[in-house]
Length: 595
Image 1 (cartoon, rainbow, N blue to C red):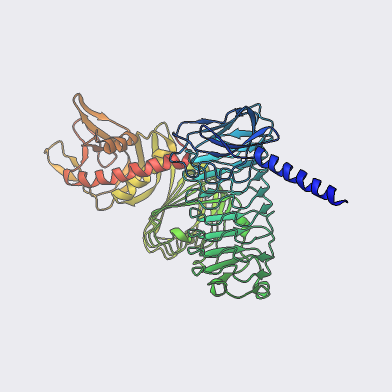
Image 2: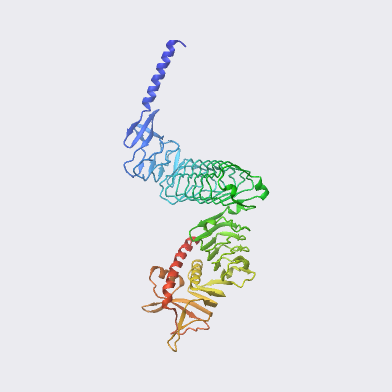
C-alpha cells in the first residue's frame, strides 16, 4: 500500500468514526435520554417526574424507538412508578435493565414480536423465559406461567413485597441471582422438573427458612445459598456428589442439612462462617459417611451429629409451616421418624409449639417423629387413615388431646412417658383403630349427624380443653347444636343446676350420663337455644355476654323450670377461653380452606 493510500485510509477511518460518534451522541427529549444508531432510537435513561404510568413512545426525534439499552432504569427515581408500558416496536432490552427499578408493573403491547408480559412481569414472546418481575410488584403471591422453563438472571431478585412464588412443573433452570438480595420471597417450592440452579441463585436471600432441592439437580454450585441468614434447613433429594465452595457461606441460622448417600466431597469453605449446624441427616451408612472428604474451613459442619440411612425423599412433597406456638405439617407422603428423637426436620418449633396440625395426604407418622415437644398440648390430624407409630408423641409432658378427624390407627405406646391423661378422639365413621392399653389414655370415637356431635366414650375434661376440642369439631363438621355424651365429667369446673322444689342452686358433682348438652342465652322474648358455633362468635364480637349450658340426662332430667348454668364467677374465665378458641377457629378455617 502506498503512503498516499495509507493517509487516505486513515482520513476515511477518522471520518467514519466521527460520523458514528455523531450518530450515537446522546439526545434528550422529555424524560428520555437516547442515542440514534442506524436510524433507530435506543433509550438509555428515563427520568420520571411522577409515579404515574410511563408509556415508552413509538418515536423520539423522529426516529423509531426499538431498544431499551440502559442499565437499571428508574433505580434513582424519586417515585415508585406504577407501570412501564412497552410498545410493539421495542425488540431489544439489555440485560439487567430493571434489576433495581423502582417499578411496580411492566406491560407489553400484544403486537410486540420479541417480548410479552404476564401479571406485571416481563417475559420473552413465547413466555418460556421470565426475564424480570418488578421489585415493587404489590401482590404477595406471584404465579409463574406454566409455559416458563427458565427464570432469567435476577428475575425475582430484590423483591420488596412478594412473599410466595409459585413455580410450574416444567421449569428447568434458575439463572444466576434468580431469588437473590430479597427480604420478602420466602415461600418457594422447587418443582420436580428443575435441573439447574446457577451460582448465587439464592445469595443474600434473608427470607427463606427452608428449601428442598429436587432430584434432577445434581450440582450444588458455588455460592448458591451464601449469606442466607435465616435459612435453617436444606434438603438435597438428588444424587449430588460435591458441595461447592461458598455454597452455604455465612448461613448463621442453618441447623440441619439433609444429604444423599452419593455425596463424596464437601469442598473447602462450602460451609465457612456457618457455625450453627447441629445435625446432618445422611442417606447412607456410617461406612459411606466415613468415605466423604470434608475439606478445611467448613464451620461447624465437621462437628455436627450424623443420622444415618435417613429417608430424604420423604420430604419431596412435605410442607412445613412454623409459628411461635403452632406447627403445621402437610403435603403427601410419610413423616419420617428416627430412633434419635433430637433429629427433626421441624426442630425450629420444638420448644414453643403448643399445637400441631397434620393435614393433606400424610400416610404415616414415624417412630419418635414428634418426641420431646415440651409445650405441645393438642395434636389435630386431618389426613385420611393415618398410621401413627410407637413413640410418635413420646415424652410430651403437656399433651392432653389427639384428634383424628379422618380416622387412622394409633397404638397406646404413641404417648409413652407423657405423664398425664390424654384424650384420643377419632371419627367413628372412619373405623379408627386404637391398639394396646394405657390407663392414662381415654379413647373416644366421635360421630356427627344433623347438628349433633356424639362422644362415644367416657371422658373427663376441664373446661379449657373441652372447649378447645369442641372448636375443632365445629370447624370440621359445621354447625353443632347439641352434644350427646355417654358419660362425661367436667374436672374442677363449678357447673350448677336449679332445684325446682327448693329454688336452690346445686352443684353437679356426678358425671353426666346418657344425656345432651346445648348452649342457651337470654333474649327479650325469653331464653333461646343457640349453636356452639354461634356461642363462640358471639363471645368474640361482644354480642353475647351471658350464656347457659343446659343439660338433659338421666341424672338431671330437664323440666320446664330447670336450667343448668355456668355460674357468674366462671363466666369471666370462660369468656377468655372462648376468645382464644375463636382465634383458633379462624386459623383452622384458613388451614382447612373452609369459608
